[in-house]
Image (tube, rainbow, N blue to C red; front, side, top):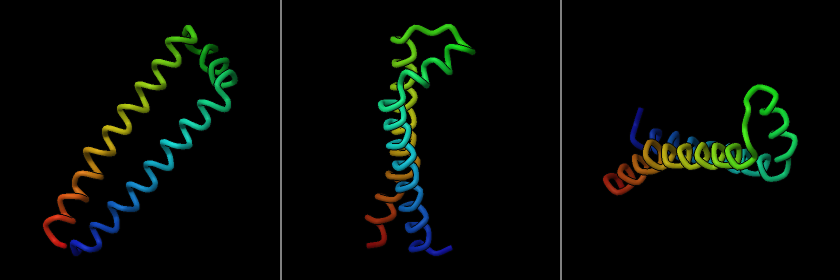
Length: 81
């Protein structure tokens, strides 16, 4: 695999991961009550705990994408431009 191919893979990973993150946020905002009711069947959660868990999950996911996809892409781009 060449550096160019690796950069292409990282760009697509970045696009797909951010699309998933945007979808997660959109579903969370638009279908909040339905998702909350579905999860409270399994777990005893207050609305505040449910919101906090989702925002924490989104934050951890976003940090993971930045650390493991965006930073390597930027490093390769700087080294091989």
